[in-house]
Length: 271
Ligand SMILES: NC(=O)CC(=O)C(=O)O
Image (cartoon, rainbow, N blue to C red; front, side, top):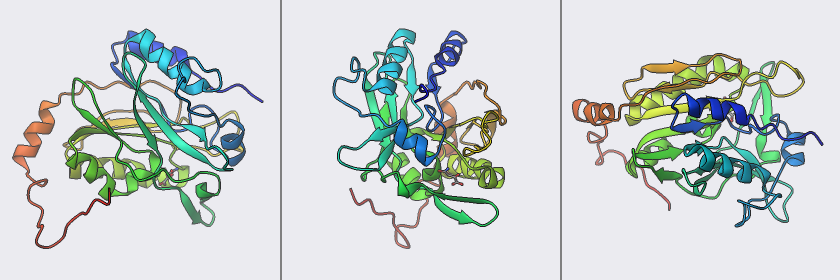
């Protein structure tokens, strides 16, 4: 089996250039195919900091600690004991290398666009159990989703109801949908929730045209919907300075979060 793809040097470079919260893409350890998900699955165990079986969690934890940074660790295929399917799991680490959030992709990418993209993620990925993934930093609370989760505004709104001022989506958007939808969805989620929206998309795989090709286009958007930085298809690092005052200001100026007509509609949480 090939070794996992750990671009540790890129995280080190980002940290050296002053990044304090580092975000990686969805399924950054392997190409995004059924075979690779199953071949590369690994468990998440309580002793992940030292257990060789938890290769990704161990590596990310050590890296967060040695760099003294937050790492939102994209995602990896998490083995589920006794099951053939995996979870698509994102782990967030604090500066001590502890896990502060675990998000398992909630909405799975099962689509069929003839001549475009056909993908049935649920055949080998199990949807995450009901959960709002959110964690506290000294800056603000950060909510977390993965890729297709961004298409569900109800989930993002619940993260905001729980105090998120930033939402982060590691992603692997398809070429077909990415072109028109990815940027639009990110801007929509940033504006309708009045949050900073970080997304980290996998780069296109120019070495292997047979595997799923990702739209890339990582970006950071402000609550105003302004793109603060954006990548293209290729592997790179992008940086943004985030001023959280913008969240407070825009929430006072355009009070959409308070102007909902609860006598007309409600968003009910089931957990
Ligand atoms: N790959 C995904 O999970 C989502 C995607 O490509 C889309 O929503 O389009």
